[in-house]
Length: 391
Image 1 (cartoon, helix red, strand yellow):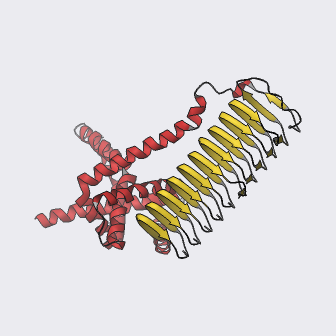
Image 2 (cartoon, rainbow, N blue to C red):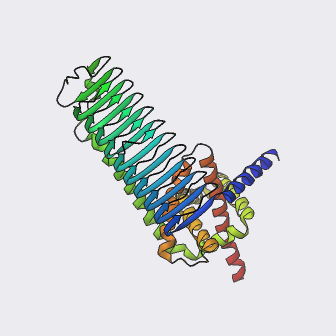
Image 3 (cartoon, one colour):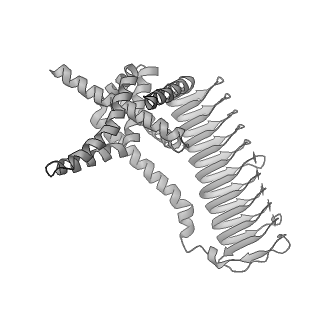
């Protein structure tokens, strides 16, 4: 009984959280008025021209943030431009990423091209991976980088750990340094306050008077031919491949089950608690039933088939949830005006957002579990309702 009460308290808390958050979706989304709480946005082109006093979670082909975001940013897109102040962390992935606003927390970024302007101050740490990375600004904490090419013209207050194809250091590092690259180059403004362990194909490098500690050539840091591609470009390609596969699954599942998922969105809207309860029973009860069926010789083959089907559904859970959420947005805010292609596009954006949310400690997995319960429960209620009508 106590566990049920606790579960209901968590559910109610998340419902209040959802009520406070604002959701926007469409081909072109422009935010012109201040947002008092969290903002969730998905679209082909997204522009934020007003302050957001909570978190910003955004996905789009082109994303531009021109004003202050008081808390965290989670972003994914083809082109991303951060031009405003961010009061906490930024976590983003994209093709081209440009940062020209100060960041109070950490910056975690992966992209084909990443550029950080000279006036930017990152008060936390910088973790970056990509094809070509240029840091012209200031990082107060540590720097960890894996890239095809890294150019450091700015400054880093703490330790640096940089590995890749080409590395150019032309700024001060306030701590120890690990540098491993096919080509390693030092500019006239390079300096290291601590020790330097390094490797490059040319062998020993003359650091002259740039190192206050000791500079040590370390063969164990050697990057084998092509290995830097894994650190930089291949990671981006893996993301593209993964997202491409997700998009194909979204298009396929939406095409095959559009009516059921559309009705499930309506069911979730009208009977959210019933959907939540039934979905919870489904996620917990089906594995128990499968295990019990496998105890008997006759039930074992059926149990194996049921287990395969169950695992397939669970693995596709984020895709299914994204499609149902897209239909829910369409019904709730746009009077079902979206065509099938737009539903799929928004579902794809929501898929990316949900993946970002799911990596948030505790809250992320819990939110995903509750969304899965509501969506699966709504689907089961929809299927059951259709059978009753047929009778």
